[in-house]
Image (cartoon, rainbow, N blue to C red; front, side, top):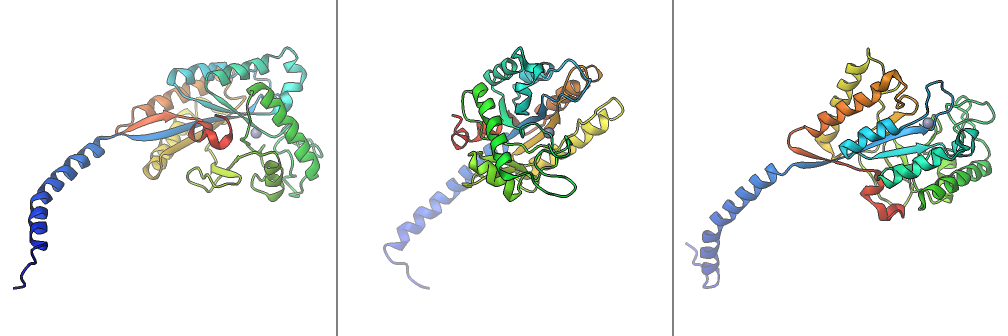
Length: 294
Ligand SMILES: [Zn+2]
């Protein structure tokens, strides 16, 4: 048998004594961490603020926001800036509403300029022809987005650095990205990325699922079931979950507020999942210094 040196033996005795202690500490810290609820960040967005080609009136998002405020939930409003210079905003109501929402902790993003492809008049995209894939001239994209950004920043009183592409515009196309870089926009959505990335470039988070398009009583339960399934799947491998809705279905006038009831029920269900704690955020809350909004 090999003899231990004078230096090794005290070390071995020490280790023998401390090992059970380490095991005990690991056991209890393991138990503690197992009991710690997992924080899940939930972000919600509404696009097309304020949609004008609709007879669902009055134009408002207050009913939805009042309900979200009860949950402490925050909303990212993707605003079509051209609406602010249209006759419907002659009294400044839209502008004042947006200011009020910002004070409550919600955020606004740039959603194109007019949400209308000028050469064809289509509202399903803005800067790219959905059939030919052709883009309107780069200069006019940059000029119009710049005008939109200025209008929104006057309301926000701080940089508006987030962009949501209108309709079918390819949001990661080099032409689009070039314009967004030129305007120092920091974020677009993209479908294939799992969690926020914070590289020094245009960034992406997952495109948000939309469950509530044209929601009515016949679709209510099925839409809720898909949202619950998605949520469960999403939080099994990440800490983030988000979903998106569209003005004008968010208006109370759409089937007596059916969408508002749906979101209320969904958020209540989320809040009561065991083993987790929900933190409602906007993308800017996660990294405000990155967006220059702190
Ligand atoms: Zn849109």
